Image (cartoon, rainbow, N blue to C red; front, top):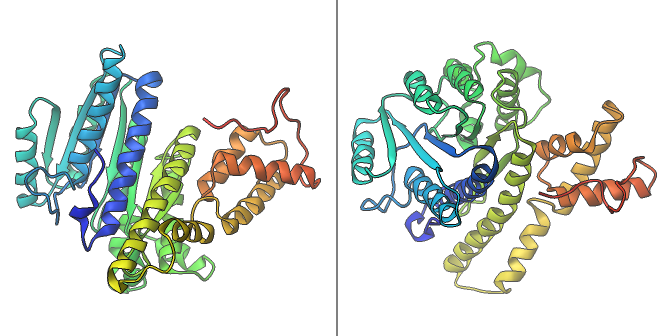
Length: 375
């Protein structure tokens, strides 16, 4: 089940967010179930529901979308002979009214393994961890989607390190950009960054937007806490205003996870361009170019693998190799993709062009035309 854009009128950025979540979960579950683990735990840390339109079936919520997506993957794989696969859902919500609706959803879907936790996510970490670790070798994917940044990240990072799964963290860029410089929110930003002394590090960064600086500090703290090895992010814009609203950050210890993230990002970006164009057409009543041409123009200006991004990736590759001569390509690829929105196919072309220009020197495996193999 994919999200229905009709339920997201006026909040299309949430549609793009949920579309990304659905696509990433689907790809990750197929990979996991066919190799690493027969048990997939999905944790929705701030489950809601909030402001959703489909109040009857909750199909425009992250928890219902995750349930439908993961159960569909499990059912398909079971149908081709993979037995013993389990999907388990751990939902947490602190708002009493939203929790009541969440609990009602769980009761209506009692045939699934759902546990609902009332209260703040930070206050339920021990119980949720126990409910995920009770089966050895299970994989846990945590969706952290708060409405702002008043979150105590330190225990959350510890929770993520202990489970060593993956996390999709929604960083509310617009809110941070507006308010991070205010003295009145210094304490809450400190909790969010798991660093009460964050101001000195913030001020030491080169001049940039509040959002960009806080994002850098957040990633640095997550990595230092052992919550993730790679932290690629994807900016989601408010289509009606063409302004960044949020960034989805994947925290993963898997190089393959980074590649999947960028692949899904490229796909979802195209839908974001399409939504933006549909809104533009509806508001102006004019069609000056075909939809496909508009999408092609948007993709050439921004997004995964566009010319500007390829140039950025080329510089990043050369800097990485200069800093670590002899680095294996298998390590270089996720390091670069974790910083720059490119895919393995783009990196193949970049390094081969740099090799031809004499900027890089390496051997290509026998019988291969590039050093990387897309997965």
